[in-house]
Image (cartoon, rainbow, N blue to C red; front, side, top):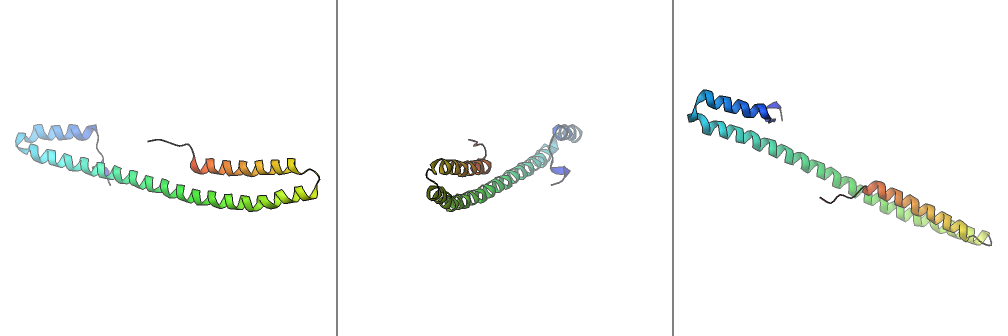
Length: 121
């Protein structure tokens, strides 16, 4: 993918100048050459978009797995955090509520970071 694949205003001007210089009998060759360059540029851009989409999908899948693991660990940690204040104190409910709000906040923050803003293409 070198400079010869890049298309721009100068390329169009060069093709028109070549047509004026060579005459109408070379129109087909000029058009075919220019069309091939356009096709290569479109294929390159499509491949780049496909690679970008694959990277986004791979990142999303890894994030979902991490989110699931974080959720399982949160529940595993939340059970003893719930039992200890309820057994050790007369009224451990406020401590349990604060602990679970913290656990939910951590999970929500991670989910937000993993998922990011939703785009509807």
